[in-house]
Image (cartoon, rainbow, N blue to C red):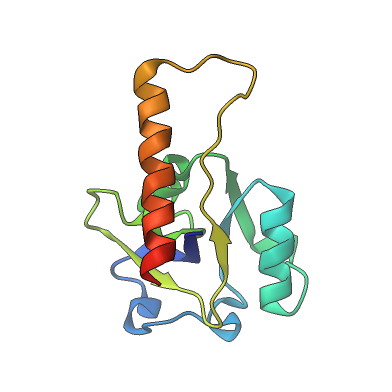
Length: 138
């Protein structure tokens, strides 16, 4: 039931850090670092209201740590999830959410055909309990 917001990760000296939210007009001509996943790019293009010009895509990533690194060395601005972007200890980077908001559900994934350890089973029980208690509170 949880969702995580997409936004732009940039250097703290970037002029866009003055904006509390990032709109499509703000990044229409930005050099971007994007997730490699096609469904995310499609959602982002829909949010932009136009296709992405390949000339502005300066990098792609599978792991957020790679996007953090590319952004830190000045390659461009990275599209990434807020939770992952804000867990870094790199204070030279700033995250700003997109407006209108673009969010994805948070997922916990495991292989069904594998027997889970007792600790993993306990963890899943705690997750289910937390989700159930959140539902009853709202």
